[in-house]
Image 1 (tube, rainbow, N blue to C red):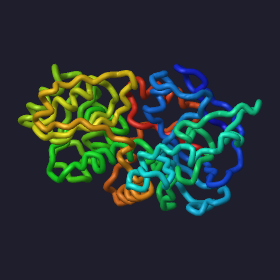
Image 2 (cartoon, rainbow, N blue to C red):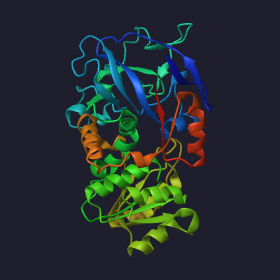
Image 3 (cartoon, helix red, strand yellow):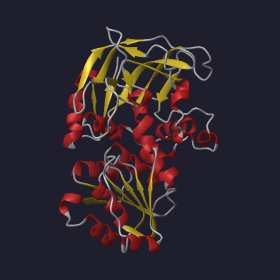
Image 4 (cartoon, rainbow, N blue to C red):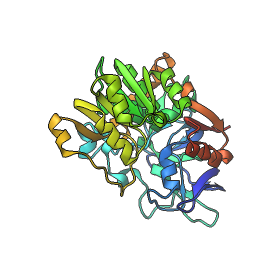
Length: 363
């Protein structure tokens, strides 16, 4: 099978022909139909986060089950599925306390150390999978707890977006922050995750949603998806001042969807008394964020969000229902469809800031 492999950091992806093993116990073999280009993969390609190499990248994918291993009871060949990196063991205290997205019991959903690798090169060298998924490939071999079965009338080239970006942004607004009806919200960054946070705030009933970005095209898309106001950060002297002036004091909920110290500080700085700032973006591991201690006396909160605090086996079918009912917009988020061989070009669009979400489609 063809797959996009990261061989060095920093570096572009290389298209290789890899061998994929037969599914073992609790494993599912999937024919990939759609895969979204996520900024998280770009962080690894740029070397901002270290990872074992070589590795098939990609973690936002959907497809059709081809085969299952022993002990698989959740899906069967022919089922349509979305893969999600919030792979859960179902046994640890995090899973059992209702927070499966926090599961760190990796060994329970990976092959034994002495087992054959799932993916290999011609010389039998093992190749890792990004987030234990490796979605930039014609096939995926994953643990059954990495997938959710979905209704067959959902287009898979749109369903894939829900596997990461939509779940992360939508869930940050609905699950992590708990945006309330009539509340005032600001989202900084209008890529795929930020646009999903805009939609989550809209579905939750926010009264005012301010979108912040540096490109008019992305801000226009944000308006289509539910933003009531926009701020072009390249056209104002200070984003915090602009938002506070617009709202008469600040927002109740803010969301940072870029992953920069500056924008995290802006998200916190624009809060009204008692407001909550949620960081969704992947801030590089060595980056420090500086805040004024006095602001915490105003009961302002800064929190993180891990994959939208999801329970993906219930959340993803719910979001698919919203899409098919016309209440969650996915088509408008897709700025282009490409073949696997064009993946580096797709990431060049992301780096240039000219795309919202690019989707790889597989025949």
